[in-house]
Image (cartoon, rainbow, N blue to C red):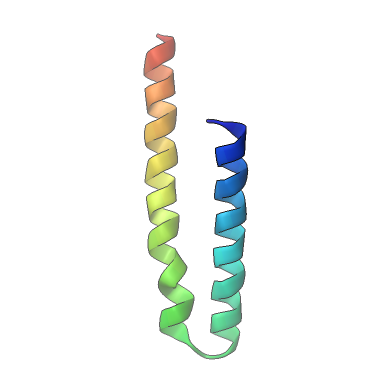
Amino acid sequence: MNMYFAVFLIVFLLAGLAYSTYSFSQGRFLEGMSIFPWLIACYFFVQAWERRNRNDEE
């Protein structure tokens, strides 16, 4: 994975988690859960990226 993309992904996820934590503390459950689909999408994206890199190495 490209270093710049990895840094962007980490910053994006940390900002989303901070917003989610703030929303939960204000009692807004649905807004707090809005980061959940992004976490799942990022997980599948990184897994596909790693699988592709593994197949390229073989």
